[in-house]
Image (tube, rainbow, N blue to C red; front, side, top):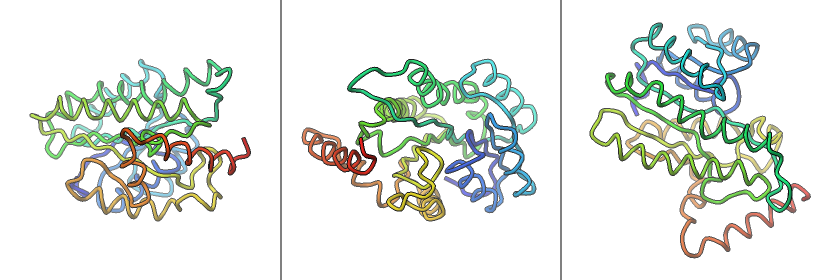
Length: 251
């Protein structure tokens, strides 16, 4: 991906990985617009990064997505990069009752939202040079965390969608990228102080280096063993990973 001279919209860009990517790309000479539901967080990011812009919208609401897509095309006709980063992660219980509100919210935010957002902008992106659609998935797309089974499932589904969309857009100028983070110190699952998680600044630095290459999958080194795991013998890795997670989180 070209790392400068773009006009970029990042969903979920007001905190965590989204904000980290937004600020790194802003510093490299891109016009960055961050989107999210929390006006206060958006205002904070814009205030800290003069020249950045923000739009408030709800990734779970199709009408809100259509409205913000039309606004972006009108206000930023040079828009050529979409980074679908918005996501929610909550613990659930795949071995028992799964709360329906959690299920619907997670699927709408993590899977339906990115698909709808891209759908609303894809025809415009096809007209732009150096166009990119990127999705923030997770290493949990490849090695599910049983304590967050719904979240892991949405990321696996998103990975599958990325593969299909990349194929369908193979004869266009639009590149489709997947960013698959490991455990990173963000607000997801209260991980900001987790010693075992990768520091956010280190993740952003390594991710930006890979993003600037021709790679379709953006993986930091610690994510690669997870990406390499799926296959006939995947269960052993998955089971050992989850045994460690249960010990860590006490469930």
